[in-house]
Length: 219
Image (cartoon, helix red, strand yellow):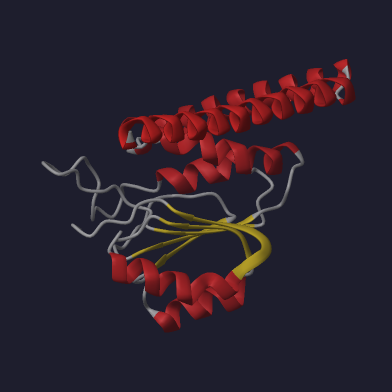
């Protein structure tokens, strides 16, 4: 008898759940119909053009990073979607951005040095990319613990310093900030990531973008 009651109760619960699901489906369908009625052909066309432009911009970023021998196209190809989504509108409006990036070198893979790490005349792929991608950039700052001496565009400045050097970072922020974009591609060490965020958060514009590319407990 108890087994039958349990089955009956379970059936009632299932029926209630199915009814709730049916109501949700109906509401979603009604919402879709309402949205379709509100969105005209011009709106849909504009949306498609926007998506197409973002994809083209993503390809452009990927191509630039590849040209300058960055590790991103091979090891971090998934970065380009979010970068395009946030940065391409800035490019389209010709925004005079200010950029601060920690880590302008190549990085070690798990097995071997993939090139340029700690070498004075190598690295800087992101700096070259930002300079080309944002030709009207107000300033592009690269900070690296290794000394770098390669030729860069006039609006690109390079500083040799640790990303957790409070004095050096504060001086950069005071002289060149606030920044539209701050990228932490430095040591990737958790304590450095946290310390850097605390140091530079005040240097980021209210509507700016803060990017933490990698955070690893194994570095």
